[in-house]
Length: 107
Image (cartoon, rainbow, N blue to C red; front, side, top):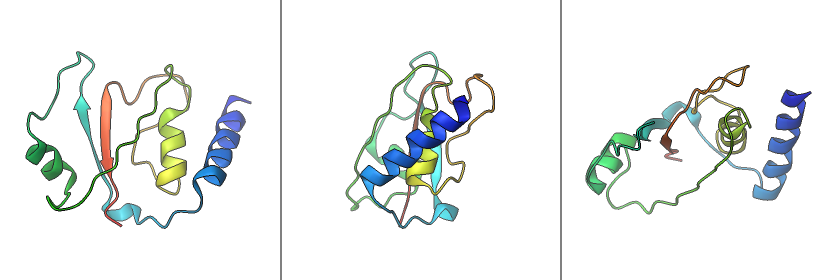
């Protein structure tokens, strides 16, 4: 039942955002802030390099917050990456993506 709720939540969010044309083969993600709240990159150039973003490209930031197991990673994967697992997910309420993660879609 919970999985169905998450699927419906993702479907409704997709309707709001609209259809996106995303090539997930080139998507990259990395841990930006760990579970101890330690920033993993100190400079803008390092952030862009880790994601493979050209320095002249504009970047938009999206944040999602919620309790462990609420479906944040599933929602982001379904909405922005056509369901591909750019952000790790689990069938249980175990945490897969503790901390703050960053991802980039080059398309």
